[in-house]
Length: 224
Picture 1 (cartoon, one colour):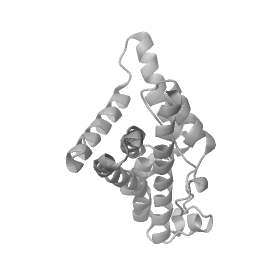
Picture 2 (cartoon, one colour):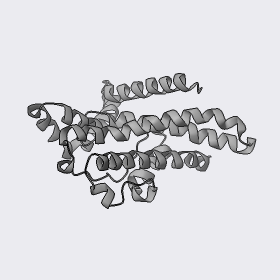
Picture 3 (cartoon, helix red, strand yellow):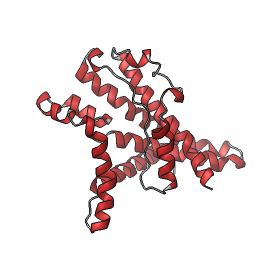
């Protein structure tokens, strides 16, 4: 059963992360930066983007531990923001490309659920689990990356939109961004459980946004 569950997550996770990173590179190329293109990162070949730990081992470990929060990442696509034609505005477009692509994928996959009836009975259960997991993970990846903390896409979007006096202090958090996220999303809720204080407000907000997005996609596509 563990193998079955893992097999229904591997393909959705790899595809979601691959398309996310390729979208960053493609939009950067369209905006004038050829860095990712020269390094072969404007590609839908998963091998170009997979990080062995972040793409495979970490999500697998979270699944085995029955974590309430599934997370994964790929090798970041390199972007030279100074090479962009309009650095601040184009930075927003490059950052938004990843989450935007994941939401588009979630919609397309949800529509594909209507095709399950045409598959043989022997493969329907596995295919349905893959499709449903793909919808969930693409929405999760989009919402998580839109948190306004650099180096996440949401953080870079906010940095690009804010006036420089406000954007510079936020941009300075980038080296500590993932540490901040781990503390806020994982350690604070666990600490709160131990001391009887609710410290999981950010995790709950992320879960609520994900649930609402899934509800919207279900309504728009007619997928139940």
